Amino acid sequence: MARELSSASHSAAHEERRRLTLSAVGEALTASRRNYVDDFVRAQGFEGTSLNDEQVRTVFGLLSRLEELGTLHKHTGQNWELCYAPLSRQRNVLTPVVDVLLRDWACQGLLRPLPSRSPLWPKGKRFALCLTHDVDHVSGNLAKERLRSLPTFREAPGREKLIVGLSTARTLALKTMLWKPAPDPPLDIWLAEEEKHGFRSSLFFLASPLPAPHWKDSFYSYDDRVTFEGRRARLRDVMAEIANRGWDVGLHGASRSSESAALLASEKALVERASGTPVVSTRQHHLFFDTRYTPHYQHMASIQADSTIGSNIAPGFRCGTCFPYFLFDLYTDRPLDVLEAPLVIQDVALFNQLDMDESLALAHCIELMEEVANVNGVLTVLWHNDVDQTSPRFRVYSELLRIAADCGAWGCSLADLNGWWRSRLASTPVDAAGAHSAVPVEAP
Image (cartoon, one colour):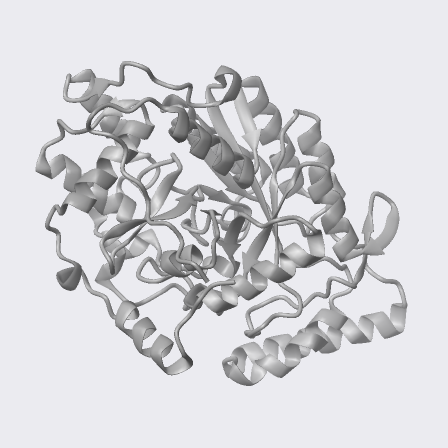
């Protein structure tokens, strides 16, 4: 479990972090920042100590998310979005600009390839496809879940109270009149589709019961009975089965836990207890994330890998890179032992926010995959589990997997990616400049 300050002390420390500004952090190139950029460059197979100050600042600013300190505002109160950045930055949103720059600098002779470079991906694969699913709902009958959520709605805006109240009443009325339960959103179809190509994915589950519920959360129980491969079973047993088959069961950090190491650690323990396997990966629900404090709390909760840094409204490269990298604590000016796999494509952004049809969404995904493949990086995608095989969303996902396999992708979960990348870095020979360690997790 994470160690956290007393309630009053935590609140004061959290508020100090929350109010962190760019002027307070400064743009000076400290030794920690230079080493951080050098480690990132070395991870891609180059010697980075020859970069000048301007180049180091460019890379550091994008990886550390300095641009996000320009505002406290978040889209729907959840997440910083690239539309808040200057237009000059927005023009590069669909390009992994950092990775392209490194390769341009190498072509110009400004970066030297390391004399002994480890393969980027297993078995010489061209690029990686990190597959993830946020499990927000597990039952086709949402009446029980919506009733569970009602006590939290005293904090919701009036409009939301009305929408959810009417939706719940409609669901209950239909259930009473028709007495025909809607089918559960199938979890097994994702595993089966990925297995066709030898791929694996991460399935992120919310904790149950939630230690600090929020009206935007989902409310299922690990004892709820769900359908899996044609049979009825408790959700906790399905989670354990998924983990036993080699898929990654991770934590879908709830809405409030992005602001608390203690909550993250409690939620992590609940998922571990239900699935019977250690949790190493996470994504925050609704992408609740603030670069000022969320990485620190994930680090303190002993989470090894995160894939929250992305967008709810459009695909793109929010961090300027499609490679995994360690998060940086701007408050203490030091790297953290949390590996970030930046989220590039989310199904909700494609189909809901941008209102794409099947062919347009697939074409967009393929173009982004080509951007990633061109720099031999990682395309991290999020597909929610609440559709079946007949859905255009599922068909796009299925076709994306097929095309990626044909193009030589390594299809992996976030836990797989985390294990491979850390092992690769540990086995990469270093010279006198060395590789600089991230901050170890403080003991409980």
